[in-house]
Image (cartoon, rainbow, N blue to C red; front, side, top):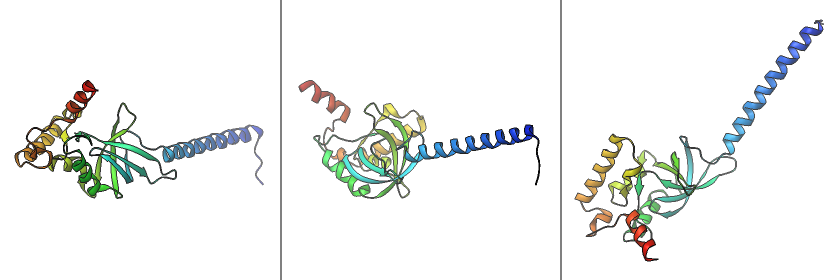
Length: 186
C-alpha cells in the first residue's frame, strides 16, 4: 500500500473536491438547460398543438417537462381572426403544421412574453410560405438584415402581383393598422 504524506493527502483531497464541484456544476447546468422551455438564439424540435391565428401557435418541446409555449412567427404579420382573410390565414397555417413536428429557431421574445421564431416544416420555411401564398404581410420593422428584407418584400410583391390569398381583396388592411382602428372605436 502506498503511503503519502499528510500534505499530499490534503492536496489530492482538494483536487478531488475541485473535480467533484466541477462535475456537479456541469450536471446542474445540463439539467437547467434541459428543463428550460425555449431560449433566444437556439433551435428546437417541437410538436404544434394549436394554431391561434395566422401568425401564432402553441407547441411543446420534446424535453422531460414537455415544455409548452405560445410562439409567434418572426417577420410576418397575419390578419387578425376577426379581419378579412383572418380565418383563411389560420386555416392555411393549420393545414401546414398543426399536430406536426417542426423545427423552431427562436429569434426574440416579444412584449407579451411569447417567443418569436422562424418555423421550419421539413425543409420549408413556414414564415416565408405565409408571405408567398399571401397569407400574411412582411413585418418590415423587425427585419434588420437588408438582404433578408428585400427577399421577403420580393416574395410579398410576387404574391400581390399574382393576387394570392389576402391580395385578392381590393384593399387589404395591414393587421397593425386594423388593431389601431379597432382600439380607437372601442
